Image (tube, rainbow, N blue to C red):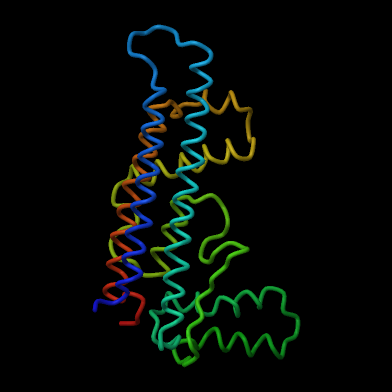
Length: 238
């Protein structure tokens, strides 16, 4: 039996769900594309096109966030349930194993405990404690920070976990994710008025449709990369 077979199947299923939902959003956007005959569209159509774009941005970004948290949390659960110790992990991943210790150092005033915990955090290559990678349900899931996902979040994930391949082998994926993050925040947080959101360059129906497609393609890459990582046990030290 290959490593993590059950988890790999779950990842494939969740990835397929994300793709199906993004496909539904693209079909929705296709219904409100502007006509090609040059006729001025009605105000009702313009309103529907705005709402379709807003919905597509918010929903596709929510799907990507939910899937990314699923990958991290389920992988942490599986590694935590193994007989491995912290010293068995690749060095870049040990910082997550010591997440609670690092967080406790933020406001610690007791110097006797401060140096003890610093010593623990800086000698993890020798630590034989059982692994306890963080799993957060109420707060941001480390190594995420609770903010709208951007390319920097995935670059951080690739670096910490030591994932194979590039995080964004296609530059358009990174650019689209960055634009979607800005667009999503404008919609969700009222940064500017609703009407102004859609007057900005790069936010037409066809632009958003392209961004959603790029999110889908990046998700396929993320699934393939994560499965390869699990099957080769890339989380172990070399």
